[in-house]
Image (cartoon, rainbow, N blue to C red; front, top):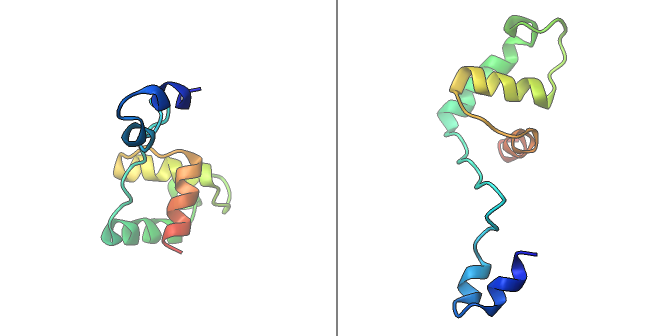
Length: 86
């Protein structure tokens, strides 16, 4: 595992606080203004954005964020974003 070599380094305590190299750093959350734009887009409904039914899924919201804001999140990141903003 990645933790073992870090404990042996002289800067082990500082190095352990860094994420392992295989994990991507999280994207910053959008500002309140950008999230308000996302909320307005979500209120239009999935059909307005080209989906055949009125069901929002995390995957669809992720696609909408990519199309509208040119940002790429994981599905888990979208869930965290929505939780963060209530």
